[in-house]
Structures are given as C-alpha cells and as structure tokens.
Image 1 (tube, rainbow, N blue to C red):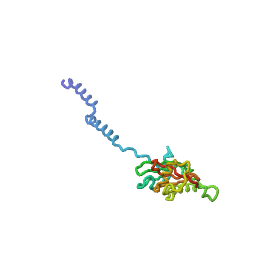
Image 2 (cartoon, rainbow, N blue to C red):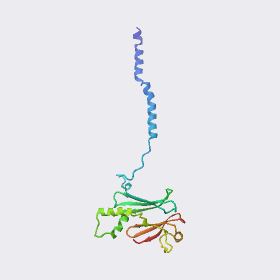
Image 3 (tube, rainbow, N blue to C red):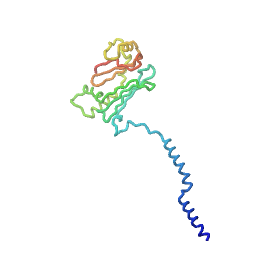
Image 4 (tube, rainbow, N blue to C red):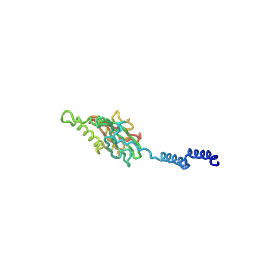
Length: 215
C-alpha cells in the first residue's frame, strides 16, 4: 500500500530531475562565456597591410620598386631620408612617390611622378627606333637607381653668381638662400628636359624650388 501511495510522487521527482540540467553544466556555462570574451579582447590587433604583396582589390597598393638614401638637407647635422617608391601593377603604368623625411619623422616634401616621367628621357639614349618592353622597364629601374646619385646633391644650393629665375621661389627666399654657403640643393629630372632643383629654406621653413634646368 505504501508503494502504491508514493509511487506517483517518486515518479514526479524522477521526471523533475531528468528535466533539470546537471549543476556542473550550469556552472561551466559562465566561465565559458568569460573565456570567449577574454580571448576576443586579448586578441592581437591585425597586422598592417603589406604593400609589398599583390593586392587584387587595389593594384595601386603594390610596391614595385623603392630606392632610398640619407643626405644632409634640412639640417646641417642630421641627414634627411630621401625615398622614391613606385607603386602599381606595372613598371610602365604606375606612380612613383618622391618624399623627403626629416630626422624627426616629419615629411617635408612630397611629389608624385608617373612611370612616363621616369621613362621619357630614354629617347635620348635610343640608337634604333622603338624599344622592347623589357628595355623600357630596365630603363625605368635604372632611372630610379640613379635618382639619388651623389652628383644630384649640390652645395651650396644656389651659387653666389647664379641669376634669379622667375617661377621658382620668391625673390626674398631665393636671395636668402644664395647668401648661405652651407645649404644643400637636390636636382632631379622629370620627363625629358624638366630638371628641377629644390632646397630647404631656413627663412620659409619649407622646401622650395630654386632652379629649373634643361636636360
């Protein structure tokens, strides 16, 4: 009789126990969520984009060639970093960025040059009509390799006997540079005949163009 009276109760308790998850599972649930959160917050930041690797989404991020040198320019004691970086999907259809960075990391000069700007002067070296793609690419590489040649740096930036050229720095800035014997000028060729000379102006605290010369 006792068994018959309490069997339904025992069955109810058994059913309730079966429906409730084990206490160990409930306790484990909270730490699992905490672990996931910690992992997400402690995960290292993504690596910066590698511009030397090919990029299907943006070919202009590809670095094809880079040349650099250090030379005294804006400071008499700390050399600046001169860089020319060519980016694109082809040596013959890309853009080169010419920058000068001071010793403190400040970019004091930036100019964009096209592949055509680097290739154009090849016409003066050709001994036969036309040139192969390989020859043109080799010429662009050589132009970049020679861009920061020692012969392109001059001291002083402006010779004391030089004549002022309209279209360059203003006359006051130009005259101030001409009176300074320790300044450094940098000369580079753009296109076929546009040879430019730039210098750091202590008066203006910036890079200025001080001359233009034929090829």
